[in-house]
Length: 232
Image (cartoon, rainbow, N blue to C red; front, side):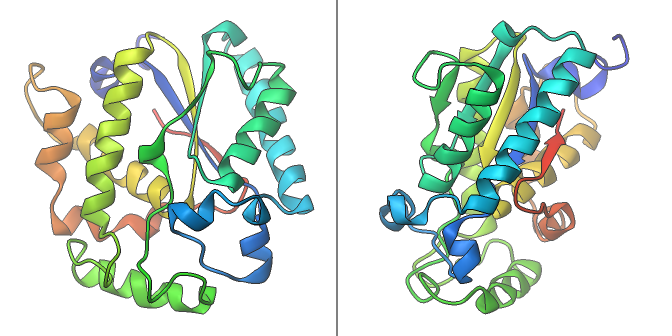
């Protein structure tokens, strides 16, 4: 227990797990659906395989909670407003027997999908490598009309601040999307290693490592659909 609470854990009020949404209808159709306007549509929720992935992830999460003797009362599920993530969160809540409409589940707009811009929206997944090549070259560069990696860092930092202020000593499951979760892992991994004084808060730590050499590496933290990971 002491080792878990050393170092970076001291800067956090909670423990965090992440879950990429299950296989969605856009995944099946190889479509990029990244705008909030399209993302919340029911037609872009989970495919049947994705529901199964969400259920399996929830069962794995429940097993981990039991092994670590974490009470379900201390669990919080925070999810993106997109239909594929809210659908995933609803499946997880059902397996955990947590009321989805209750206080333990919270939608957080700032953990939504990265908006890749109108030139990529509803286009083929084959265009993703163009975006990631741009990210590697300059993570502060925005796809035309879309969000850069650095833009996503800004709103993920806000989301973390919300969770840290609202929850105390909870186990938080963050249900989000591929790029945001890659970027979240990148900044927290770097912040953990960043030498700083104990007086510096989480936001200051993240600001200190929001540099091209760090942000350009986010693809190293890629997750499969329905993949569950302990974060910190």
